[in-house]
Image (cartoon, rainbow over all chains, first blue to last red; front, side):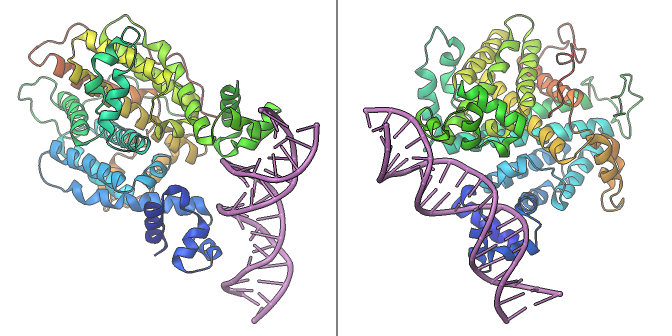
Length: 227
Length: 227
DNA sequence: ACCTGAACACCGTTCAAGT
DNA sequence: ACCTGAACACCGTTCAAGT
């Protein structure tokens, strides 16, 4: 299939080498034949972005505590993006409207609703988790791409070399700030979010009755509907 | 200055129209003259990415409670990215190693250290906040770019049109999921993170100090609509 | 020694010509 | 009616030729 070949090409040769002509050559067909399957390159890229997200869906699962499910969903999303570094940037600026994206959204929202979040809180949580994961992975990939070898020592050296009086906090924390990628940092950030979410779910910390269904009418005024 | 002209060009004509030739024309110089200031286009883009972040620094300030400072820093970062939508993607895949980035890092880390976070916790918090903000803005810009007009009604219609049995959670929360951009959602996510951070800072404390009330001043007035 | 701009090796996409 | 591939209007970058 065209999309698979395109992903393979982008991954093996790099995003810059992914051209309609090269893809045609890789498939052994006239490059212009691609235009009968996709209106233009843009549309093909949309298909690529959604295809990458297919891997995200499986790990969500439907059992376990909601924190576990949220964690594995976010980790799955990250893994999918990391597995296709040259597609990740594409994903970032595309609507996430494809089939695979929709299924992932369904699984994630179902988990949150089941946990007791109101539709509003669940949607907010979902967007927040998605935003964090996407941003984290992009920073991760960006730094890896720039720094040739191992990231940490390079960054630490860079931070340590700064003027101490001008950058007191940065030089003090050079070692800690040099960690900008990897599983541990990611899960730490994720924990932070989940901690916040848990507090929202059970504000009193006491064994409050599990709130199911929509929460009582929100006091705060709703967003002004556009027009 | 070349960088300012480049940003202006990218913003007024769109990222796709930003070429070395066009920039040369806009500056009234031979396009090839640019190569004496920047080794190649890549290096020029690095300069653009860092320049955009200059606007992030001012809002951080050095007074107020750490939550306020973190909030205004994140909001400032977001505002800077939103103000330059066609540069935002660039920022995403670049090392954030320029001067402006460094100063923003210093201000952010100083605030967190002062609040009582350990170097390790402060660095983790900083990376998490940065990742969330970047990812959120990219999703925001991506969706705005795709959907021509007002985002919310379009997305709501799309979610509502789905098969209820196949997408029960999504169709149930169509209204809430349709909100994928804007200040309110951003600050909600930010609150989640800050809540988690606060729990980390004061794990045992029963009562949160003072204000737990959400949303202080909304981000500076209204922001310029992208494009 | 400098700068210019022609030229090179590419793009995505169109469309006339050939079947 | 279809498909091909030449051609168009671009790129970023190089480098020889002019000053």
